[in-house]
Image (cartoon, rainbow, N blue to C red):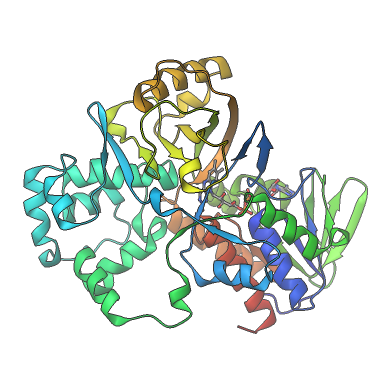
Length: 455
Ligand SMILES: Cc1cc2nc3c(=O)[nH]c(=O)nc-3n(C[C@H](O)[C@H](O)[C@H](O)COP(=O)(O)OP(=O)(O)OC[C@H]3O[C@@H](n4cnc5c(N)ncnc54)[C@H](O)[C@@H]3O)c2cc1C
């Protein structure tokens, strides 16, 4: 952490950068935020069109850390959390030729066709299986060892598609799912650990992390707009392409973009890993290579809106399609069920995902080919004869979701060395500490707490 503080530069105006700036401002610390694009918000962007309120990037987050709830508290009602509707509790998994509800209780678990009888019986022995002793073990190995193959294929695989658009045979639980990894390490079992943790009780602060699904009233851009307003436009520079950091005098750093050159003592970078070598040209390539080797899932997101929905009932959160089913889609989110008012009455709004780590070739299709694929798959899975959406938008993300795989240890060690050898530089963003919106808010909060020394 920096031994010298102000002035501070934040590079990147996504959720991580904006939350960092917001808390620095609250702490009375001077800073400036530099954003490459013409607007802040990063991948978060809500659009309002033709009676539909849709997201171009993330659709919803999980209240997995108290920091997320506290950010909204600190924003003092200027924008409000919106929690998922109760009708969106059910999660669907595609198997064979139809959707099946992911069971949440014992009876559902016994009756579901998603898992094999062998694994259903075998799961009773999960609390008694020895805990893993390889911190670098991949997720598929861990799940096969503790739960069985059908749980891997029809529970964990789709869960991982929904969060990471990823591959359980690449992700390493210690870095990608640290809470699950700790359950096994600390309690010896997922099931036993979950029960014991529940019994241990929670502090009032921990209780804020309800794990409910959230968005923001009128869309996630409302949060971005309020953060931008609170930070103050005078503290933000957009359109700074080609930005570079160089070492200055007395341990300071200079930031150059265009013809401008400014000096800072602390630099907080919040961009994706692929940007780091360009931003910090003085970092040894051997070290940055350990960061850029991290894979990203490439994802295409379709926003589909129907003014009159005539397909299957939409009383669920949405459906995920296990890789084993070999279909063209990763999943479908029923957004107008999750959050009310996102589509005209009797209509429906969906996000449909294509690509992911195991199907990168789909990302290379042109929009006509992608639309033909989505039309065929969506119509078959969602029970419509005619594919005539009133809204069809396609959003491409080459660097959608970082994958915390076997390179994570080397990557995190390189980040620590670079920060140690360059006091005042903080390498943040989703290259570490989690990929979800709540993780981003938590990371930003803790960076500012370390700078100010105030919790
Ligand atoms: C399609 C998609 C769906 C997602 N779904 C979910 C979800 O359902 N739930 C969830 O919790 N999370 C989801 N996520 C993840 C979540 O959106 C991210 O974790 C979060 O928004 C990332 O915020 P960030 O600020 O770290 O990064 P970003 O939003 O990527 O912001 C980084 C910023 O840095 C800027 N930048 C880059 N390079 C430079 C440079 N050289 N100089 C200056 N600025 C630069 C960029 O322009 C950008 O504004 C999703 C992500 C994507 C892409």
